[in-house]
Length: 81
Image 1 (cartoon, helix red, strand yellow):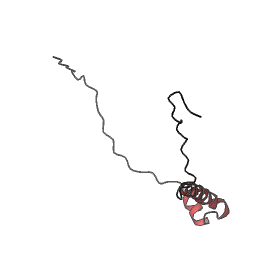
Image 2 (spheres, helix red, strand yellow):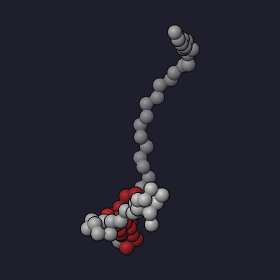
Image 3 (tube, one colour):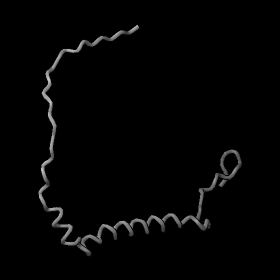
Image 4 (cartoon, helix red, strand yellow):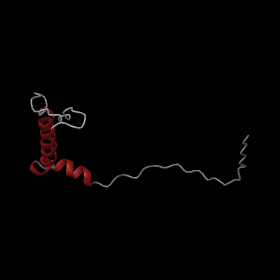
């Protein structure tokens, strides 16, 4: 069909014949499957008992240094020109 100027309207872009067009889809699918498998592996292969026991211990208290301070007024001066 011709438009008012007598030219044919532009066609929509198609990339069906581009050999690399579907590559990114396959890469994305493989990444999703790999990450899903990695997350699911913790259900299939639970962590060792040694790791679970190490996580359940109570942490030892840490030493903290303190210093007594007093509040004091600090003059704030803003000079704008």
